[in-house]
Figure 1 (cartoon, helix red, strand yellow):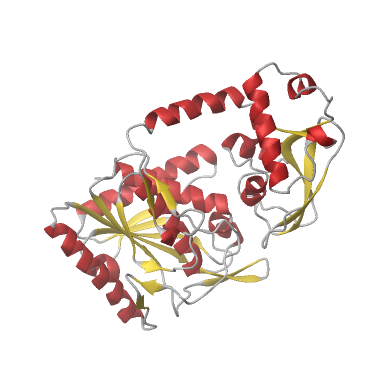
Figure 2: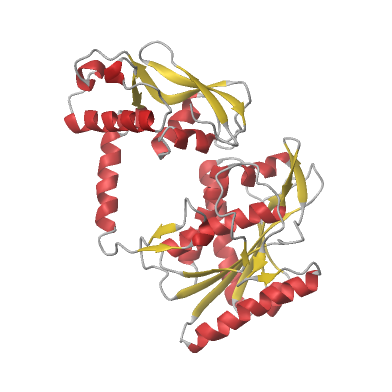
Length: 390
């Protein structure tokens, strides 16, 4: 069994055709668990929630057993098809390939054909036809470009980015995560450990940046950490090694820090403007700190004299609101769009929007950014909004 630094699980196989179960021993990260078993597709994610009566924002509980969307069969010694009652050869081959991956990665000690159990991921049963059809459509849409670019800033796992469209080609985005370096920003407590605003704002900003690059945009990460990258763990370690683009030490003094960032952006803005680039935007990401009992939604701020900034902020707001209306019906969304005379919005040249993600002190708000899937979702929503904005 592989040992993960942040999440340890032990497997136990039940009777044939029962669900494979794992017991959570440390951590709370559902997405890493599914990735460990090579079942990180949407079908498997939804089935996992269904099997365990969970909501997407729920944590895993230490010591509790969870069902995986993987069925366990006693292999009949003949074929996968006759063992589980399917007739499609390619489908059986996919199941075989998946089992080989699981053995090769030492998740499972023995292959089914050598005395081990046959494991069948449910997505290759329930969602097999959907998966193959959508995969074909996806490949068709990518024929126009097979370009892959490498950005080390996204980390080893995510550094290679495939360009999936040119929708944002010719657009430049300056992404600024709050605080960093000697200033961690707001500090909260989660599961007895300190969580720092700058780490979570940075991770979401990185994810947003990668999404924009996928659509052909030019992206600058103004606050940078060369050794963090995108992290698929819930509790992000606090550190102080962030720098300002390109590699400037971040000052402790707030005004100097903000001026340093605005100046870095303005130099780049001027360069691109001379090159004829007409579309340049700045997105600033922060996490608020309020009383423990104060739960807040995402807030979007723009400079009062910027009509375009107001439009961008409203588009971000309406996109996020529509997602809450879709995925958490009846919850209600109380985020706002307001003008504010904030230093970065005022001093930086590009049209900008300043986003507050939630209250780092509130346990319910914390789920918005400590759960990996939620960080990924927020970044995806922001990217969708930016695809729409003027």
